[in-house]
Structures are given as C-alpha cells and as structure tokens.
Image (cartoon, rainbow, N blue to C red; front, side, top):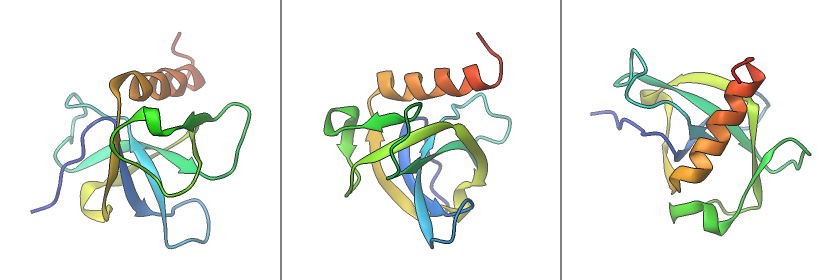
Length: 111
C-alpha cells in the first residue's frame, strides 16, 4: 500500500525541477484535495537561500528533519502522486505548514 502523506510532511520525492535524483518537498494539501488518497500539492525545498523562501530550522519540525540547512520555495508548487514519493523525512509544526501554504496562496492572488 502507498503511504498517504499529510499536510506538513517533508517528503523525499523525484526532482522535477533540476538534475538530481530526488529533492525534499513539503506537503501542502489537506484532506479536501479531490484525490487526497492518490496525490498531493507539494512545495519544493532547496538548499539555495532566497530572500522570499521560508527557512526551515530544527524548531520547525515536530519530528525528523533534513540533513542540511533548507528553504521552502512557496512559489514552486507541483502535484505529485504519493506512490512516486520515497519516504517521509520529517513533519513540520502546523504553524510552519500554514505559513508556507499561506505564502503559496499569496502567489496565486489569494489574499
């Protein structure tokens, strides 16, 4: 059975944006996503620091974490099937997941 990742999960998945084998993503979807059991919306995480990116610190994780200093690009959102994800690296506190989701919505004109 494929794991279903919940909002705030930091998941290792296919790198759809560069030439690496994988990259971490933050799951932004909740159970209201029409295909929640099959896929989710993910924001890309990177080690490249950008002014508008959301930095992740140890305090942002309820469990697990990432091996290097990482930042989430709330403007880089992709839909990925749960079956294509490798495993959960950690889980963010709700406030951090909400901040990333709110910033993502802002890039789509939601105020």
